[in-house]
Length: 245
Image 1: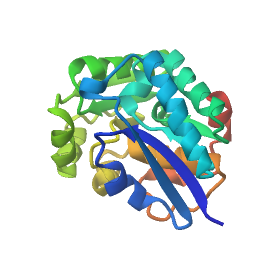
Image 2: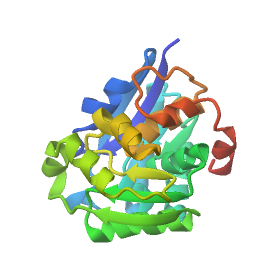
Image 3: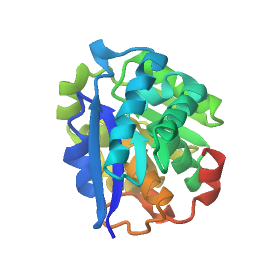
Image 4: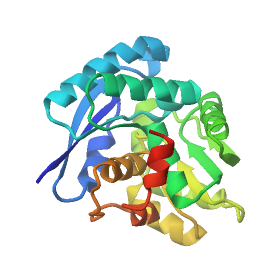
């Protein structure tokens, strides 16, 4: 049996297929819908929701088992209320199971037992602060947050994974439970396990969390191709799903 994951991503994203989709386990297929929602096309969430619902409805036509709104900044920018609106839009469109990047990250932290977080992003200071505020409101302590103000999608995509490895190691905190390297449009999979080994703590990334959450929602326990300690938690995170459903 083939499992199907539907992903609604920003039109400017070039990393989801290049990195994330290539790392789904055997028997899992990802289907992509793009929306213009970042940069010059950024709009308030209430204006975006009808397009999200339409995209989700088209993914249900492809019989997707779970549908994810996959944009970290947009799923955290209006707090937990905005996250809930996105989940409702996906469900209203007929998604059998639904998640967002924000939801997947929260569930990942809960499955890992992580409450004290170090946050690194490619975003501006303002967008990084919005994400830190989202995490704080959701019950996590952000020990350190830094955005590197990269200049748009081109710079996001071309920044090598080693840059993020080095920045994470520099930001190491002995009191951190986990490190969140946030954004669906940066390359991290090649260095996740190295960062974890160097810092002795789990790493959560946007692309990694959404794969993990989709697999968990579907009851899929095969973690082949999937990097990081988070995937050791497949099949053990039911309480987290109930908490953030």
